[in-house]
Image (spheres, helix red, strand yellow):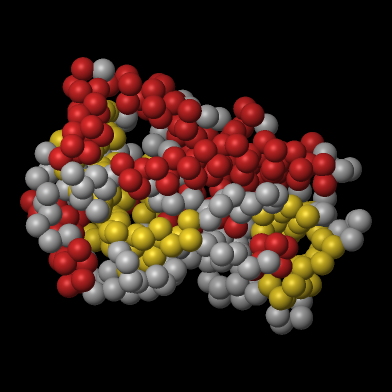
Length: 396
């Protein structure tokens, strides 16, 4: 049995490793000339690390990443703490895996190196999809350079601008959320006394919020800042912005935030768009995973992890139903749509929670969080249990 995967990002690479784990031949098509990751950090919560543990990669990802000491929330201007709950030891005990921050490039390198070691020369670079076709026996990806790759299953892991999704279901009509996001990565040695805490830290404020955490064994600091914005609507992860604009958006904020912005050499920004869940993710022998079918706003740090969960379950189901792949793909959708839709909705709701503008709104939202952090931290842990405690490898 053979799978052809379109897209060499986190979801595509994890899918390739998962299918190889179950004994399938793998062909991975990546349109870029090099497999690499953009200069940003990502958070892999315990539900994602369980997949990598099953694939034998958890230790290496931990080695290349950073394990935060706690989950934390602060006010963006004053830096006053709303809550802080430890997770270095508590997380693995409660959720049975670690919480890891890692540079996207480090994760991509880890996954691609493992895939090459395990599946040989299966990664095709400079491979842009022109069209797909299928029949009762196979699915085919035809490239713009004339090459064609055939498999029993064709998987679209080509992200938020998925060409395969467009071919299957037509052009999408995303809704602008009224928010733009900034990102930057800075060497910690440049930050001095205003280095971000060694936690997964959310900084809240009227009409905006920021997230900070450390990467690469604490050598790098990652910054993401989200600001409500009416005008700028370009959806690109690689659009450069100016330091002055970023500082203007976070004027008067805590020095940890403004120092990160001031010290960064590069500032990227993109508009945040929302998309309704698709009514189906497959047609025939072709299926979508990750952002290609359920793109998620970055307010729960679950977008990449949902793709990781998708990848493992899809490989498992296809392997269990080799003689009827269309049944496997239908089962995959039914098994995942409730969870991914719930994560999409929760991420959408957090956008409002982090941006409270009034004193009353802040007191209503953050007061109970502060009280729970001081007196009943188990309530904060329990809120994460359905997400972090989930184990897709046991659902399979």
